[in-house]
Length: 238
Ligand SMILES: [Zn+2]
Image (cartoon, rainbow, N blue to C red; front, side, top):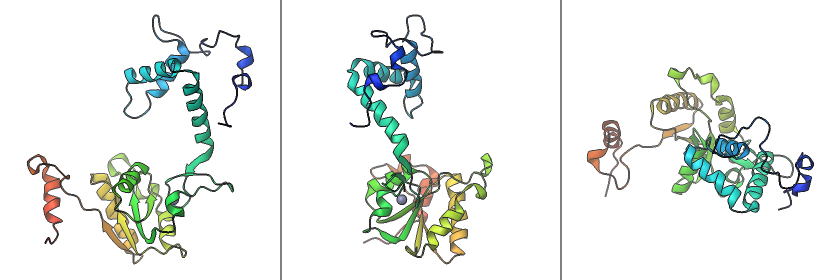
């Protein structure tokens, strides 16, 4: 990998004598009998990852120093590259890699086979990825980044509504239908209602994802709201 620098070119490496690479960075203390300070710091950073607890983070940190130097060095190099080259897509907010001109456009916005008239609005990139995995969405997306939350004081002015209006009006990709795929929670529903009002006033057809019982699930374990909505949203069959 060309982006990786040799150890001798790393900043500050000349100050570290050979055989003393395990010296903790200033400010990182090693607990008695615990991990060296620097390794402990790596474990603390890993513990910030979603779903990674303290023990798992320590296991990861230990793996990185025992699996061979290349693993830790490659991972570190890739993470630095990631920060320099990844940005939100300028059109939809999905994750994109900067092109040679310094512009971030994601693969979905660049895919000409997508139906540009159908726009799916989601709260987070993770939701976009989940919908993509279903294979059912052939249009494009718009990532809000957050939901309306009256209880937490997040008002309409904190949502990217102006960017969404501009996206919908884009003469190069006029939008006919906006599918609101915010989660079926209080905040998700409040956001969906706001979008229906705002976009409906612009003459756009606004649809909402249906909610119902999970595939393979038992009806007796479904909560009342989910089951109620599954019945309200029933469709002709057969
Ligand atoms: Zn995009």
